[in-house]
Each structure stands twice: as C-alpha cells, then as structure tokens.
Image 1: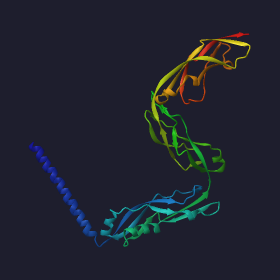
Image 2 (image 1 turned 180 degrees about the vertical axis):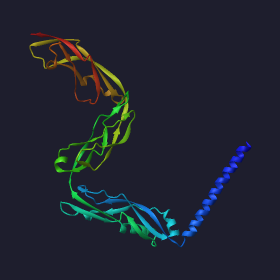
Image 3 (image 1 turned 60 degrees about the vertical axis):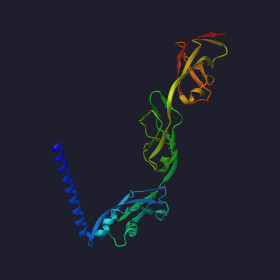
Image 4 (image 1 turned 90 degrees about the horizontal axis):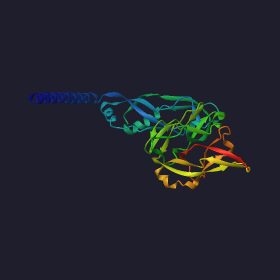
Length: 319
C-alpha cells in the first residue's frame, strides 16, 4: 500500500514538472516572438466551379494550396485559432473559346491574399505553392445514361428482397469520344459482395468502362430486406401446343409449385395467378418425358420457385 502511494506521488511530480516546463517554454516562445517577424506555412483547401461538363483538362486541378505568411510573432499565434475558409475559384470565363485545344491559367496569390486580409491586414504572403496552375483542355462529348445493377443482390438464408432495389442517382453523365460513348446504354454498379440480412443503404462504386470517364464515381444503393417463408399450391397440369388429333395422358396429372415469398407478400400470392403447363413442343420424345413450366398471369412478379415434380411422363394417343 505504501509503495503504491509512493509511486503515485512520483508520477504526479513528473507530470507536474513536465507541465511546468511546457508552460515556461510557451511563455519564453511567446516573449521571443512578440515584435519579431516570423513565418508560418498554412494549407488552404480549394474548390472550383464554372467548369462545363464537356471540358476535359490534361492536368488535375489542385485540391489544396500551401502558402507561407510573414507577420508579427504574436499575430501568427492567432492564426492557430482562425479557420481559413475554402478558397472558391470561378473558372467560367476561361472556357468560352471555340472547339479545339485551349489553355486555362490560375494565379492563386490574389485569392489567398483576399482570404488573409479578412484575418489580418498586417500579414505578407511570402510564397504560394503552387503559385500558378496551367493546363490545356479540350471539349469532349457527353451523354447521360442509366445506372443498373451489375449483378444480383445476395440475401442471407430465410431473407429476401422486400421490393425493388433503389439506385440514386438513376442516371449519370459520361464523357469521351463520340463513337465510344454513343454505344453505351448502361453504367453498371460494381459487384456488391455483401450478403444482406437487414435493410441497408450503401455507397457502391460504378464499374470502370475503358475509354469512358464517369463524372459520378459511386451511387447510393438502397436494399430493403425482409424474412421469407414458403407458400405452395397444388395445381392441375394444363396442355399447350397439342395437336387436335392427339390425346395425352400424364403421370402424374398435377404438380406442386413452391414459392419463396416475403412475409409482406404472403397473402397476395394466389393460386389462380399461376398455371403449370405441359408444352407439347418441348417434350422429350425418346424418354417420353416433359419438363413442366410455370406460367404467370403477370400480377405477381419477382418470386423464386420450384416445381415438384420437375418433369412428368406421358403417353400419346392419336385420335
């Protein structure tokens, strides 16, 4: 117990000593900088607007510039507590030329100076990096296309989609050579590896297309999930495409269709919306069997199902 108390006292003294020296160092630095011209490097985020969608620049615009400011030491200390607003640069006037290769030029110094004047009128901008930005550009073709899923949504066992998957935005702008982008009908969401067991909204990247630039890189995908169960109907097998002079005997004469259905749609599933059919044109004449098919009236869509038995035996009787 005494040893623990001694350790606490020693640690407390070490912390107090460190804080004391930190305070003394700060005060000495403050006294040294007052009345002395010092320099500080400050980063500034930059955003651009007024760039048409059909403009393609050969160089990427800097998202940040760094500048060195000179001022009184005490004034520099205040910059730590002053947040520099994002530098906004309007490039509208730089893209007014005719079709062909052009050039855009940006001098960052006036924009930085304007921002710093709001904080301090005594500061001097010593250096800006980059000071200038120059890039050639050309006008390219653009086209708006729809976004679609590249592959199906996978759900966990005993789960299913409650309704259609929602993609936002439904359309995006692409650009590139006229011949290339004219042949594109859809931009696809890259494969989603997640197995969903609950409703969720995720950001999903769009699949890259060779020779095409996507102006939107990712989309929101809203997946609505619910628990599923089975619902089955036993239905008589009906005939289609049977010649008038042929009579058919099936073994068995009826079959069961088993649906995987979400709980919210369970009561909407009716047996009179479906038919199990024997299609004379698809029969296997050698084995005297035929694979059964499910015909949907169109009222209910999007169910997975199985038919039992999958195929039946038959005997033909010519009239």
